[in-house]
Image 1 (cartoon, helix red, strand yellow):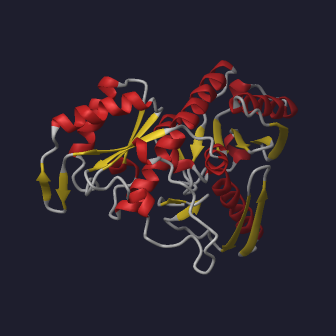
Image 2 (image 1 turned 180 degrees about the horizontal axis):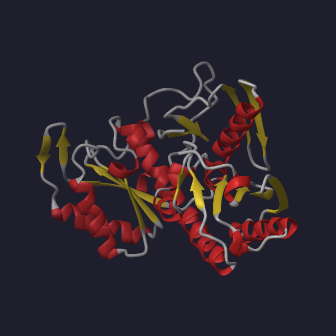
Length: 324
């Protein structure tokens, strides 16, 4: 359901966008829009978020306790992918499929230029591990071998990674083996994040599903740490815990965003397009071109009535197959 008009509801709505250079806050209340801009704080982006919100509230003559809704769009995940600052990860997959993320679709990075190459996979060959199992579309063809799981878990522990992506053949239909492996990893490595392809992207096509799961694991420690700090700082400042913008333009709670950061990779750009489309409809202009430039990336969208949606894109050479 659409929100009631703010001037009638008495709501105080706060929106924040974290970019590579600046962090911007907007307060909407009683028909007024009040903004604030502060430098982003790369060592801990949550510091800049709270600073911007408090500054905007002060300009609006409001207190944190009066905020009824807090929404947050960001490019933290986007920038981590563009700059290669995500966490080192391991990949666990079905025996014989460890090279799926390197083989890709057997296509070249550029059709006519032989000097352009795909970026290295997010997981180097030494950190790709295989378990003895096999599922097909109709069920289990080869039961999961417990000894191979023990060997792989020990290898992951030895590798010292911060997160693990698990992508097994046909797990989008039969996720039991992935769930079992996650249980074994959590028992042996309680501090390590585990991303399952059956949860991140439960659909056919092994390369895209495993690639997206690797992106999810790669970003999880970075984004999880940021969102945890953000939730703590927001509560300490008397603010509601923010809802997080997804790449598809919808909002999810902070904990869900921390569990699956791949869902929020295009959070900031999506928020800009959704906002621009809303304003365009409000003033009666059906076709608009949006332009959103930050310190790290620049995003442009053509909006014809409603924003177009897709289920696939590539960021810095890494395919991402999620609604956006």
